[in-house]
Each structure stands twice: as C-alpha cells, then as structure tokens.
Length: 114
Length: 111
Image 1 (cartoon, rainbow over the protein chains, first blue to last red):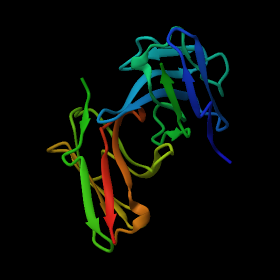
Image 2 (cartoon, each protein chain N blue to C red):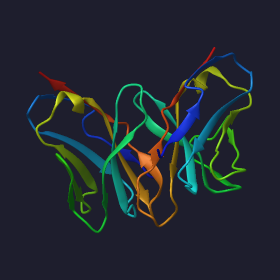
Image 3 (spheres, each protein chain N blue to C red):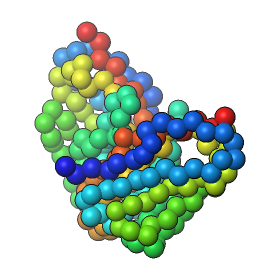
C-alpha cells in the first residue's frame, strides 16, 4: 500500500530537548516536504526536498532542520524546541517536478512543547 | 508572496443539498490546483485536481471549477452526505511542486 508514515503520532516534550520526527514514504517519490498546521493558518511549509541531499527552506523554517540522506526518509529535527513549535506536523511526498499529481500526506504528528 | 485564501471559513449545509466551497489564489503563474479533504485526526486526502489549461473537471459527486481571469477556484459537492463533513483545503502550485495551501473551510452537514 502506498503510504507516508510519520512517527511518533503524538509527542510531549520539554523546552530545549532535541527531538526528531521521522517520515518515510514507499512510493519512490523524489519530492518530500514538511508542513505545520495551526488553527486559522492552514498548512505552512517548513522545509522541502527535491531529491536526495537537496533541501530548501519553506515559509516557516526557523527552529527546524531536515536531512535527506535517503530517498525514502525525510526526518524533521527540532534542535531546541520551544512552546511556539507546539503544532500538528505533516510530512508529504510527491513524484517530481513537471509531473502534475497529488502530494500524499502522512497521518500527522501532534507535538506539544511545555 | 504566494497565498491561497478562502472566502468562507465555515459552511453548514443540509444533507442532500449541494455544497460550494470557494478559494482565491494570488499567484497567476500557478498551473496546478488540488482540493484536499481533512477529517479529524487524519492527514489531508486528495479529492480532485485541475490543471490551468482546464476550467472544469468532474469526479464522483465533486466538480472543480477554475476561473483564471479572477484567480478563483471552487469545489462543488453534489448531494452532500454526513461523511462529507470535514475541513477542505485548496492548494496551488507551479510546475506541480511546492504546494501553497489556504486556511481551510470546515463543512458541516446537518441532518
């Protein structure tokens, strides 16, 4: 089954404690991205990757890091989480530029930073 | 910068009626648009898409209309059912990548 898998689904952490949210896709997609979803603001892109070892900032990259060492994985790293990063996070993947097709989303990770 | 917005943040319709959800986009270069449905506790799910070389596309009970002149997108749901209750997002992109999403419209279906 084609899917994007995020882990964990729920996470409560304390300010300043480094954390990683994993994302994996099994569709051999080249393009992957991370979004955060906040009430009234919709989905805002944090980072995206057009292929292995190619990453770039989205609209709200401050406080986040990503890496793309393998095609299937695109982890989101919060080096020093702060309460304003409490949000619902989604990973998405899609094929490649010029191919007009949907982005597939994971189930989401609800992060609370206290 | 690019932005996608919605005219109505909430929409309530009677079961069996048709629903229309609207969206305005700002980037005239956008050439691909998608409507997503998000149910509580789940990630967004694809409903229907449309390329900029089209002005209408139909799916099962859903129709997307694109008006490039006024940069407007709409989603029509025929015979709305309780299972259609969700938040609906429009998204725009250029060259099929880097989707920009609107804030979403919550659709509530009344019995």
